[in-house]
Image (cartoon, rainbow, N blue to C red):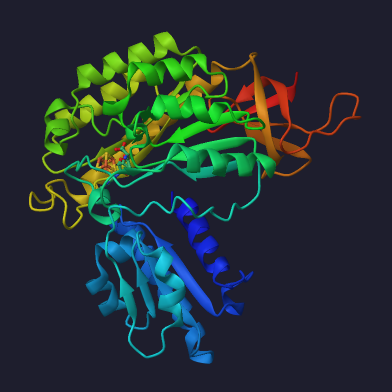
Length: 425
Ligand code: SAH
Ligand code: SF4
């Protein structure tokens, strides 16, 4: 989501006459786009800001800015810790950046007003190249889960008109993009007039040149029958569903104010698996939420075993100011959170390996992204289930070379928890 937002910022600045520099050392303006979801991310940003502040020692005219959720979340504390900042702009203030950067004077220019109407719908983000592009379909969140700062830093839920999305995706297709990832904090809560998320998926699927459609991040509470049907029947919509559960304990889910119980969630998983052939499931988990006992954590481990996710993002609970859970406190010690997280990660590695090994011997169409990181002439791409496939880029005869953007059929020869080793089928 921040990559997509940075591409919007880049487009705003380019319209105002800026060009991008290769390195921070060569730039007149350096902006950091930030995340506030956990404290850890904030610490990293402060460290990087202090490094960048050194640029101003040799070139005092360099402007340094902090953008995004961290700016929105805690600008007072940030200005105390990084008084050298010239610009502090929240997620709804990017249109004003040229003006803010142009302002003379020593005081920082700060704009962290949230704007219920801002969607940047008319600004086509600077697409970074490659076969996959991210397209923001909705912004903000209205769910207010007790642990989460997103509704406070990104504001109310608002959807971008389908006509703007169709135009943007059409342009991307014209530039060679094969896969679009529709983005939103609760992307499947998308609604513009009569167009809900499943209708949007079908509209996007009608655009020529776009071969694959994905979306991130859906909320389990907003998975409608029509969405399941759209994934099951629209060939371009890929069989991968991210269903963040957060905890396997009803007591903790209630305290988190997630809006579903474990039984409902498992029923959803069963319906999804029955309807969508070969679907991959992934999830998000928080360990050590306030009040989480050993038995609650064991319930989470049980859920991970029962569902058997293809992959998972797992986090230690981080208390966030302004959230509903802020005043509850933090009852699980850092060490205990660490222990639970390690146990969970170890279990998920086992599950990922098991799920990936089950693919051995099977064939999949892979959208080629480019050379694999490991080099050696190997190529990498994703299967429909969003698993990384690695394979030699030559056909057996060594004649035809596979290129980024091609879709090739591969057979899985072996698997780790993170990737599938394949050969061209
Ligand atoms: N809207 C999505 C999640 C967006 S935030 C959803 O509700 O499913 C991405 C993930 O960050 C969350 O799913 C959660 O697992 C994690 N997260 C959010 N707030 C957190 C916090 N305070 N501490 C630890 N992890 C958190
Ligand atoms: Fe945060 Fe997701 Fe809950 Fe919204 S739905 S408050 S983004 S965790």
